[in-house]
Amino acid sequence: MNTNHKHYFQGTTNEILGHHHRYYGESSEAPNLPNHVHEISGCSTKDDRHRHYINVFSGFAIEVPGGHIHSYQGLTTIDQKHCHSLSSNTFTNNYVPIV
Image (cartoon, rainbow, N blue to C red):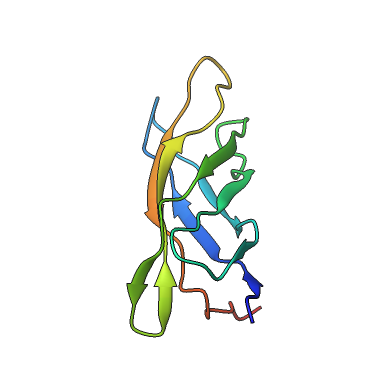
């Protein structure tokens, strides 16, 4: 039986104009099939009196012990005449954060 799953993600953007932003969230759902991807979207922390939005797609699944992860990279939206780059990996599909 194929079920959908999500991944948690978090990271820090690169530094531009003396500041960076943090971000975290949960990816879009995708089926447990080979070569699936996830949408990574959300909003950064508010730093230096502004924030940025993120909307990128992950790469294909990368098998690791305990499940799989996805890499992603891209750019934030432009705010205050600049954007930031981001690049990271999701947590495994079995990871659940402690709240």
